[in-house]
Length: 427
Image 1 (tube, one colour):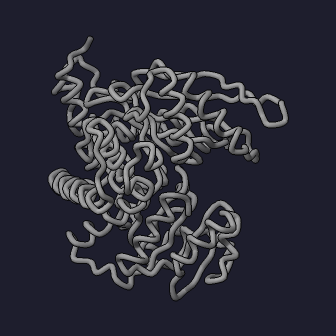
Image 2: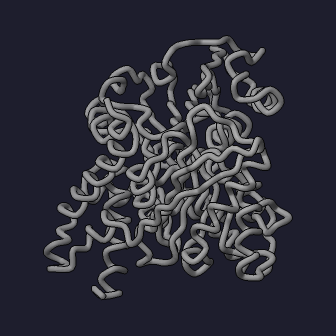
């Protein structure tokens, strides 16, 4: 299978299929006759594609492809992360940008959607000075398209608070701003928000908790497998283990899997990975290495927190967990999602479950604009309120239409974006 089919192409197709199905269900062509509302989400407002010539520490030059896709700003300025990965392609970035538009609408944020990416050479690790040069070059290529009222980037795969610090500083050289709301996920002492680093992972479990409350499920003692132990997976596992009483028995990343049939000590596992690196995860002393596919784990909850297309029609039938919790963007292909629903799996979709990151990014923007600083407790309390309200709304929509939660998320979000687009007119 070609790389495009394995990554962005398949992902974009899955998103667009859902968008067309949603438009048909909502009868958008009838309601907004001649206005092509759904095409305003499927076709991005703007695609910026440019080259970065990155000087390596040894003096050699890597020529890298970079993207920024601004999907739709009908409800507010574009918002979305930047990922550095060898799998990045334009189709993937387009799909993620569309999902960001919908994700902001699902949780009621006054923002649109965007996404950015840089295609890294496979197997290459950049030094900190090289990462800084890459960060600044990325801003140089986009500076006219960025801004707190235009497009606000944030961290994503392989980018972090340090990368946002470099980008924010580079942007400030053009604008004269010392602390800017034009980037989020920044370090705390550069205007970042308390609670932002863990927001996506914590939000995943907050959404699960609201699901359990609504369906009278006792999460204490339930077992969970977590695919992916980066920022999202590690914080989701940590909250599940420390605050909810869930027994996390399986954890995997790109280097392998560690298993403890009783439960893994996630606090110790986080420290082990921090001190020894992600490649040391399978050798965690509190677990046993396992070469199995983690989606086959015999657990109550499968948390997918790696990359998109992790579950396809080829392995979806191997899932034993009755509940699938999506921490990553697009971890199930459209066909896998259909088959999982037919098999009776309960799915809490990405567009709802992992919206904690963009929500706290919005909080960061508000704090920056007001030169304010909220406590971590206040940030997480506000986050929980928004996520719980969003979950309840999606349950109402799902009941009204007799559909899955993912379909309900699309129905609600597309309705919101469609109405805003119509109000703005067609010019």
